[in-house]
Image (tube, rainbow, N blue to C red; front, top):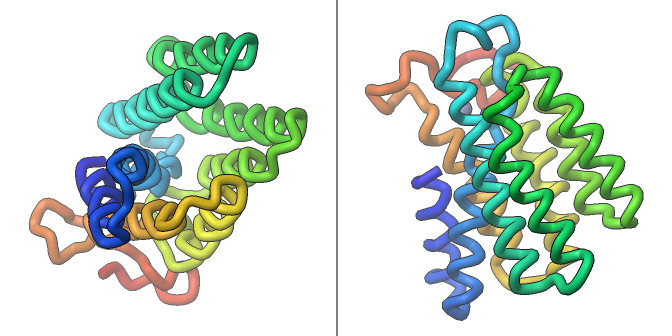
Length: 203
Ligand SMILES: [Zn+2]
């Protein structure tokens, strides 16, 4: 999350963005750097609580972003709905986090919401969550294919919000996670399978 935030901020500096945009990229980077680990392994769910913490952190970060978005950009009923959803994102995962199942339903719900309010980028985010909820941990989402699929999501977000540097902040933060998972860092026992499923070598 910190590496992603730093990456997003770096894009802001590199693009000479305004302070608000740099802050946005920092937040966006923090969230999208957590996205690859949405592929938590269901079988290990009961043993590895760290992964639950990641999920809770991810939804909390998304909830905070949504709260900021609602505060600055939404008004009236939509703002109230935004705040309600962000409180739900902050609170609910702690109460009933059953890993895959919850993630799958979240993805489905996000796709439905995107379809209902006619926002394609929200549907794409939902589709990516669905994808991450059905694959094994550190496989597809941690590969070049995962990067390409996330690029499509990021491109759609950028089409909705054409801010210079947003696409780079999203995609580079995602990639920063895969780099931070590499074996060359002593903390990692497992590496990143960049060429999954063609070549299962861990880097
Ligand atoms: Zn990872």
